[in-house]
Amino acid sequence: MDWGPAAAALNFSPPMTSAAELKRKKPGSYRLPSLIDKPILIVTAEASAFAAASPPTAAFLNAAGASAEVLHLSDHGVLGNGHGLIYEKNSDEALAPVLDWINRHIPVSE
Image (cartoon, rainbow, N blue to C red; front, side, top):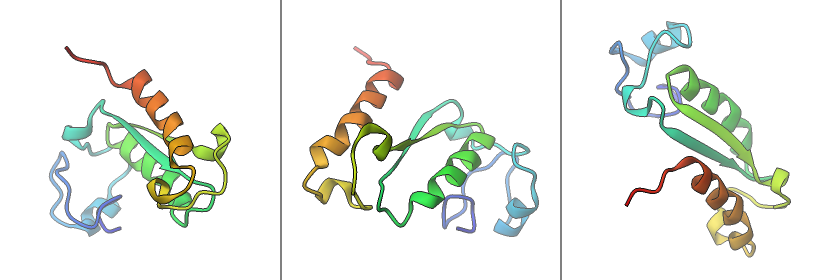
């Protein structure tokens, strides 16, 4: 993707005028203000074609001030899934570690 994890321009601080400018910047020299300290979970599945992109995406987001982490479903005993997790027979099983993460990272407001 031209703009880090996105195809379109993101709201960086300092502002970027082009994707080429972003590529020249050192990681950590820019921020994504709307994501600072926001918990972000990137879920990867064993057979997903996108799994290899997950760690670099988390690194990019973290360098920009977010709080991103990668959850490998296989580390939680959820095996064989591809990219369309909600469409697979074990979608409930795949959702369990995600819900656990949400419960640990997102405060409940009343």
